[in-house]
Length: 184
Image (cartoon, rainbow, N blue to C red):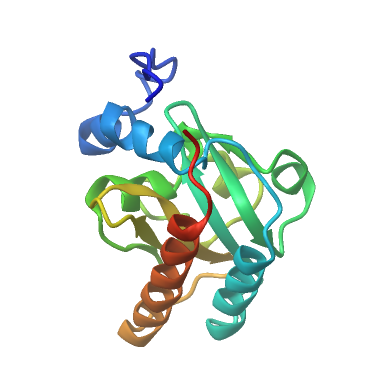
């Protein structure tokens, strides 16, 4: 197995608390590498999953994200435009998904303009993101590598049934990722 170097967090001043420890966790980063998730690649199954998630929750944006130590990138997305669509991701310190990864639990933002953890994030202040619901992609080894999430430009409440739908789709995404040929 390839040795994973100790990450040098350039954004350490931005990330504090449990999400920082989770983002920089070597075992989590090794799991991302083991599954070959550290590079984006087109995938029809993942594209279908993000369309299903966005459609089921009637939101314009759906993503499968992978959270690395300094960046988050999108393995699949629907409904994005502008810089996020072009770059397929962004800095980890702007990521809402890091909170779901850190807690191994859903992270829900009904109105991003007032949420203390994300209200000053560029996706909110520049791109007008207002609502978000993400569930962690937890592998069979118990490691969160990213999220299946949805988002929109209007505040919105999420019901328990919405989160259950995302969890079911996330389980399918993880099963698919683990069936793919792992890297040596």
